[in-house]
Image 1 (cartoon, rainbow, N blue to C red):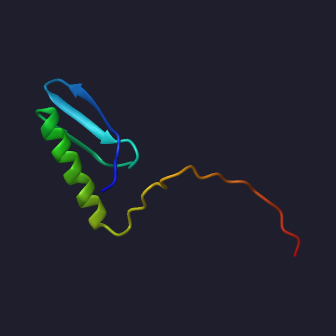
Image 2 (image 1 turned 60 degrees about the horizontal axis):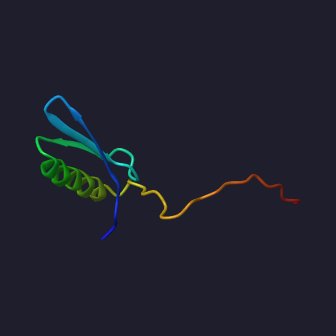
Length: 69
């Protein structure tokens, strides 16, 4: 089981949210509980597509370096 951060807000009468660590996983629900279930379903559906790349579990840094050849 992986842990994610659910960011959510109210839009009129709906709860709308996304998984902070997984770009593209959004959903909505009439209640917070329904939103949680819907966003879990959205994540599972996304995972069925093998082209999805999850963010790393730790920070990744980049640095350009020169290599003599």
